[in-house]
Length: 166
Length: 419
Image 1 (cartoon, each protein chain N blue to C red):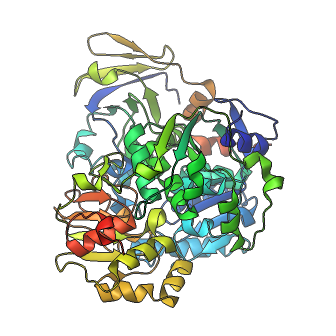
Image 2 (tube, rainbow over the protein chains, first blue to last red):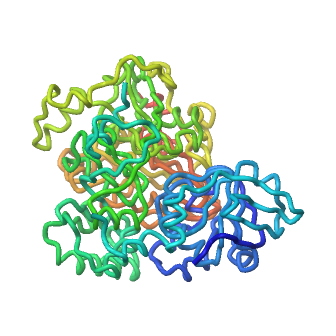
């Protein structure tokens, strides 16, 4: 799998979107991403799971994924078909979970002011840029090589399948 | 001067010193999983088929759905029991034993250790001068299989505490004040390190609450230094630690604090919906009508929490318009509250006393809130939908403030009930 270029329509959300909003507590006995995905971001707005069928890049404000360590939050977004989350900033555990599960999570300061709801944007990992519909490019800090490798491998577990470290 | 976190991580990664921002591979002393995040960990362990590396270092808890409220939760529990039958050395805590974080601090974590848990409130053990942090289910599996994990050495935020807490002001009020100052992501990727002359006014119960909720500011961990208060606390669990032998964990001196909290001036705090960082002095929200009240959780379900709530409720009744749910954090706490008559005080006051569980705090069971209801809670999060209906409003406060509010049926300053 290569993640060099990802393209999709934008779903915009605000600051401090917490893990209870991404996947409410009542669904935590589920572990199947597809099932969890039916409720992705339902805590924010019950219409979002439907919107995610056509808008697969989430553009968020600050501190996306704050709160609980529940990996279900990342699984729900993956299960809903989300291709990438681009945020002004991420909460720490959510970010680690994203990398470990192979969900592309990119920090782009100022991104919320630059793209509109429903707009088609492109993420180019090779060049470390987000390209808006009008062709404007937003630069982000390149992801560390090790993290890109984990994401490209499909997550930490896929890596572990190749054997335990020394 | 190295932060306490840096010193602990250096030792765990076999180095003399580490720099802030440096990535280290640290040996993990203990791993915690439970019945919400653990099922994903189990799926990974089953899929990979590698054996659990050091089963005696793994702590497994059936605490969120304790006892099970649903068939799906029961099936998860069944799977856990069956899987860990193969690992008799693993510390397995079935339903009714208590909340993972409370049990871990009842003699299962020691100063200087590195502990990770598949739960964000794993930060709690920093009160015991340990490095502890929350991880995802996948990383918990990685730590279980390899005995180690990578960490970026976090930048410290030095919190200086001065003065002494007034009566009916607690660790909960301290952390709500810190969160008000730093905001919901003010400590993201960082460590909260506590120092100052006010430490001697903070009991272990206060420190555990503060470390527990440090994650609501995004903190990777929080850490209190080793002092006489911690050494005394550990004695009840059979540990007689000597300060001299753990000099590395002694309070840090000569650093410029980033934040100073004057404990003497602090008032009871209440965090308004929908963020734990929305704290205000209780006077700003006093009189607001409530439908429900909750005392419990890994944040504030300890014996000291129940004791002060009982002191306020003794000989009184809660408002007929309010229901109060009291959930002790562990079986040890429950036994103590039964033995010394506190349970009876709650029952006589009109409260519901439940078995130990994460229960109401995460909207799981044992007191879920309905549409448009207003609850005041001693727990840790007031996000939309956290305790049940997304239309409910959650106010966070100390057990004393919750107890006083339950009597009045309105948010109330607990100092009105000082005896």
